[in-house]
Length: 225
Image 1: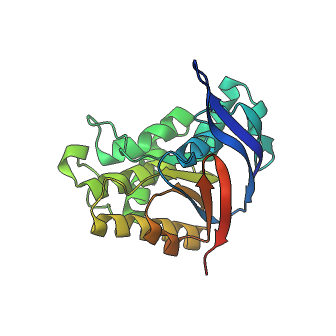
Image 2: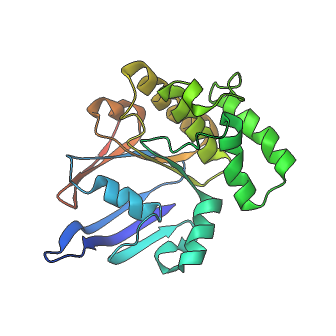
């Protein structure tokens, strides 16, 4: 599903900073994988390379049948929209739009039928337990609910991979548990591939494997029983 080979990322400057130093591993279709490590270890940098948000200095990333590091900027933009979904720590919802409008928007950018997408957005919000919040604006719902809107938005184009960057960092423990259980439900019931960066050791119990990153290298890959 995702094959990473010798991935390196060095940030330029007077003193170049190597964030990834040669990372290689594979993520299987339908897996729920956590990327974990200390602050500054390179875990978010790795996620940004996999999600085509940033460009590696060296190495290759293959997602499905595509060598995505070889794509042009325009091709990467199209691939992200059609194949990948993103959930961010800060939710990144548009405050002037309702929950349903926020979820609907990426499907419009894809060029899908507006009426069908509107109905699909409502179904996805119902799937994440927010069928009663369709007309609410972000400032009218809790942080946990905003993150569930963001998850529904990430699912609107039926992505092959769902990327989540510290999705529970701003949530209380109850809301965090709800979001993580939702990820596990999507993974188990819909076979959704999920790649999540987290700093919480307890999150391990929700995933299939943990890729531990230390100083820009893989420290170990742990299968969770």
